[in-house]
Length: 465
Image 1 (spheres, rainbow, N blue to C red):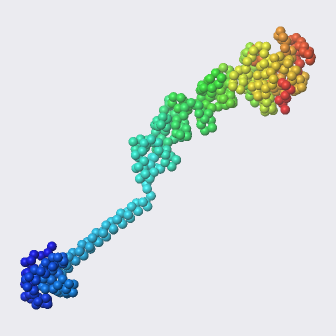
Image 2: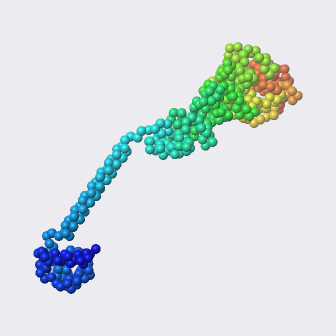
């Protein structure tokens, strides 16, 4: 803003009275002053320059004119410069303080970052504190470093919970999901053993856990021990036994105070005759081994009161049999097929029964209608007498019946023979051969047979080699 004309005139008067400025001696007329004032306004010069021009100097002389050593304008400029300097210093100080504050903040954050984060309890054991705070916002199953946890409304869950349609268990201390065996609250005793598969889901029914078949209650998942009736077998159900560790047992096993036998393939409890390494035994309807005298299929048989061995069978040694001989003898003794089903024992069908035994044992041959036909088909591997017979060999002689087609049975060792008489019959070798002497004569295009004739391998295939 420019000063009023009255103020300018006052300044001119003061200069004319005591100023040392050379322009005061040549003061122009009032008109000149007015003209100079107008010129100043047109050029837009500063207030200080305007005063000089009004005292008679030209606009062009302004740049060459030396300002007085002291003036109000210069003093004002110095004050302004001082204020600016102080403001700059203040701003610099502010920036310095701000910089120092930022450096302190960065240093604190760096020190905090260098500190080892404390680990939290439970699921947070696997997470630094900052990450745990983020994870707490999650819901459902969360896997961290190969460990799975369950979050609900941001909190880690412990114990048993149903998640994704399956019951699962989370460690009461750490919250980690459990797999494999676990003992959890429940059952009659207040505790029960259950099993969680690799996904953490509780298993039910029959399940192979840690290399053993086990059974877990369909309702509660509790592992079963002792006897159990489960799906399987020809009838759709089978009785099995699980030892104290819950593993299914096979072979000979003492359960509930009695020796019993469980199929070596299916685990199904066996009843009837069974071939063991050095004896033939019999298991009653409850699966328990019998001892002493028993009537079975109309026969009175003697079983050792200590070992349960059928009289005469103690000399059987399965370890000296070939694999095929053993399979034939085992099948003939048990009278069961590979699926556990009893073989048909229809009277007058002795040849058919022998064929089924060999077929189930894995050594089939071409079936024949008559026993004599089977014998004559195996003449190339046959012999006479009853000494040193190989286990599994077939015996032949004349038989009863209207057609007198002959009779066959299987020698199982221990001087014992098993055949089909409308039921499974076990007799001594001497008794079996003697009975044949009472039957009539068989005549074929090849020969005439009477009583005990001899032994043979069906189709001439020797199983003892």
